[in-house]
Image (cartoon, rainbow, N blue to C red):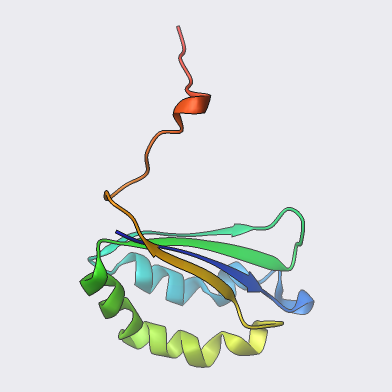
Length: 109
C-alpha cells in the first residue's frame, strides 16, 4: 500500500475553517475505490497546521487519485488558504491496513 503523511500549514485566519474548506476534496477522495483511509488531524503544537494521513491500495489507486478531477480541483482551490507549501512523506509499505502497536498492547478482563 502507498502511505502518505502530509503537513498542511494553513493561514491563521482560515485554520478553524479548514475541515469545511477541504471537505469536498476529503469526501471525494474517501469515495475512491482504492482509498484505504484519508484522515485529517489538527496539530496540538501548532493550531494552524493540519496533518493528513492517507493510504491507497497500491500504485494504480494512488495514480488514479492524482489524476482525478477532485485532485485537480484541490490543486486550484486549496493553495490560497495555505501559509506555505505542504510537506510530505510518501512511501510504499507491505499490507493493506494498520498493524497493532504491540508495545502498548491492551488487555481487558
